[in-house]
Image (tube, rainbow, N blue to C red; front, side):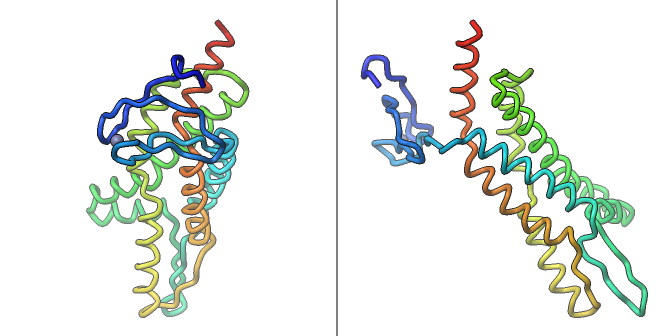
Length: 208
Ligand SMILES: [Zn+2]
């Protein structure tokens, strides 16, 4: 990249203004003063993030439909999935808790995954999706509030406690949540907002 036409980039940690340089695939650039990560040249970011997110969404549906675990007590078996767990917390007069669990483990992951699939599949077809600025902002705001990983930990802890008093049968959803944790981590690792903005600029430039 020519020094005069190179873009300037500001470090979000120490505000140092630096010139952007082209990176090899898979490499990252750090701030020359504080060492904070400035940007990455994520390998095939759009395709990989789309593939991981689509796989995560399918597994997420399975995780919500099938039982997490079943408990057997004196021959009676009670089966529980995530939505039933949320509504059972609600009926036990813990509405706020039920709402928090619903928002962080069902609503936000659904909205985030669907927006990501819509955004990335449009870009892949070289179309700028409707409302892309709002979607990008929303993904940034909501993503820290998706708590599938915390839910997974919570389920494992309660499982250990339950097995001491009941016969517990593990359900398909429990394995699905485990797999989901890895898929979401892979999607987050291949996601690059900078890559998306660059592609949006490029598509915009082609159409004008
Ligand atoms: Zn810095």
